[in-house]
Image (cartoon, rainbow, N blue to C red):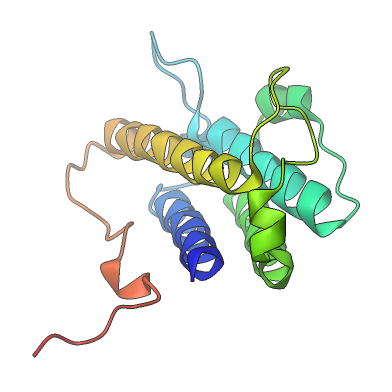
Length: 168
């Protein structure tokens, strides 16, 4: 059950990321920055999708993805369509690795040291989900600043949870 819920959460957050990016008025707006805010929405998308494609796709799934973390923070002007494609690649990585997340794999140490530390795979995957959510919140605030719209866009849909069903 844990792998299903975990991959559902990662996928839901990535879909929310796609909805946020589509809510920007144009490609240029995704790359705006403000005093005191170092990362644009585009930078956050590149960082998050690179993160998932590396740690989930390449390390756990053997996809062969090669991460360039410096480029995630240096690239500019990537279109919303290209960002959406990166989000789709990250979703595919999560969905492809799901069958490999056995209890044995989840209880084992994650195959790569993280910040000079050895951590359990299940705990690290929870960390990745939390990291994704944290930056998703930053991106939501960025979008609200750029668009000057305070309204919600339904980014985090409860209906996308694996156990969601009509009440009553």
